[in-house]
Length: 418
Ligand code: HAM
Image (cartoon, rainbow, N blue to C red; front, side):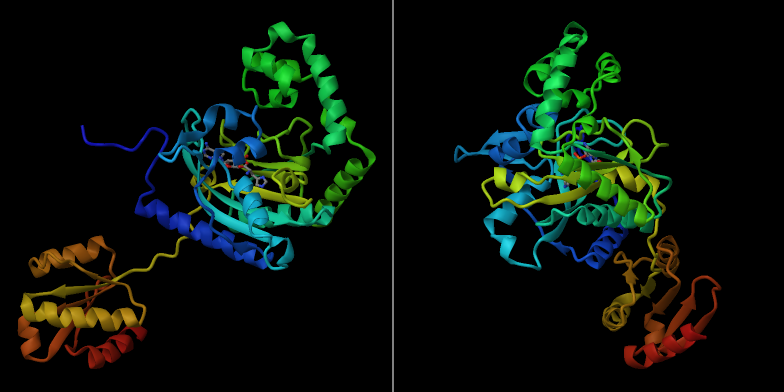
């Protein structure tokens, strides 16, 4: 059998790719409005970066990373997400001192070796935005608003913003202790993974998909009841600013997100009507991460939109550009046609040629398949008379124009205008 893509990986074919381009453009333009600048990060990072940021006992690090030892003996990983790389970059280039470089975004593929299913791939694309250096809750509201603006501009169907606060290290210490004790009572009923989580990182039990574990969690303590005064105030302010901006949200006290670096505000965008993989975006604050990775204390917040998951549910906003088709007959026709193509493209007109140069009928057939709105027929007989034929492919009307591009183009533009 011929070689196929690796399981969980896929190709994006032209019709779909056009939709992606528009979505990326909408996201770019929107993020620019909010003052974000685009960056590009490497796809490969040192494994340690993800272990230290996402957390050793998260599903991503434990089970899902594409990690390998390269020929130089280094432990490397295909990035499973972009936040860690952004934080690494922020520290590496001392971006603290550049006022124009603290609101950053990147668009690119991420890799997680999850079980493939609809909406879940092993290579998937994210639009990832991060804001460094702002601790104020207004920043939380702004970045959530940027995310929602992108989704609205993409004409996303009904979506929900789920919101929670995970507090700071202090709040979480007490919470984890109580959660651990609560889970102890159900230890035997927990799945083997969760039994281990109960001991080492009880918060991660919220990531478990096993029904029995989820049932147990229904009565578990919730983090918002453990928030310290500062974290409580911060959360109240975030909610206040979101309401001010007319953003509706659903408080979800069990939203802990699958990564260990989060502090305070966390959020997810859910499309309630699409079934299992319904989180199309997620994010939150990570005020300690830059410092934990060796940088200066820098509060930060960000989000990532999952393009593979979102795009099937948004309309195709692509503006289709119909080409002009050059039907070229004989060597002379080809020569003049190539010159025509240049002149037309200089005018930003999309030009198509069927390089098989079959009969006129087959070339015009091709023009129809390509949905050309105009064709210029350049054949040897026409050239002798200094003429080419301009054909409106919709009405089938034809006129003669000069075969010489400069003069012919003027006539063509005039006719198109009419
Ligand atoms: P995340 O929730 O792991 O967060 O991923 C963000 C989004 O990426 C998800 O909501 C989903 O739409 C998409 N996604 C995740 N895994 C897959 C997959 N296997 N197949 C298809 N789509 C997927 C993060 O990655 C954080 N770095 C977000 C963030 C940025 N937090 C702060 N800044």
